Image (cartoon, rainbow, N blue to C red; front, side, top):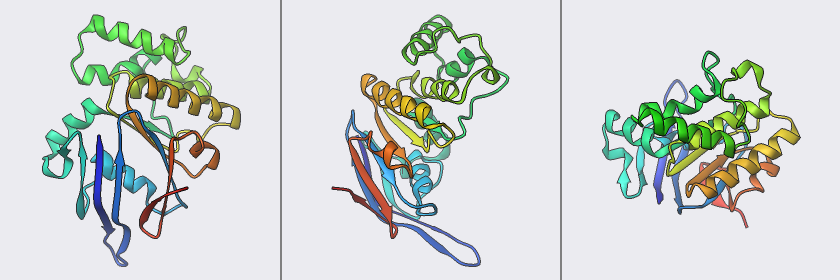
Length: 222
């Protein structure tokens, strides 16, 4: 489903830095993998390149056979909007919208009719254990609950690929474990695939496969 081939990225400046060199990765539908590495190893850069948020210096990223590097910015934005879901460490839940409105955002952007949107938001909130929180504001939620909102938002439009960047970095151990289990369960049940970027061994252990990013390369752990 996802094919990454010979991906390379160098950040220019007074001291040019090679962040990634010749990285390759294949991800099948239903797979949930983790990418680990030390701070500064290029984990977030790899995720940004896979998402099409940054352009590689060389190499390719293809989703269902569509090569991102061959698309212009408008086509790439549309592909990302329809086919990807994102979960971040900092949640990025909009504080002036209700829980339901936050979750509905991807559906609004893709033009889903109002009645269907309401039904899908309700179903997704029930699925993540927030059925009674539709009208709540983010400030009324705990960290774990807020991340559940982010997971619901990432999955409500039924994306092909979910990208999670340190999604438990701001959570306590108990909330982190619950969020990781929820993320894995929902990704699998929705028929998506997911890449979890993390520095946590405990988080990575929930994945089907674990990769280590170091020395600019990506290697699967035994």
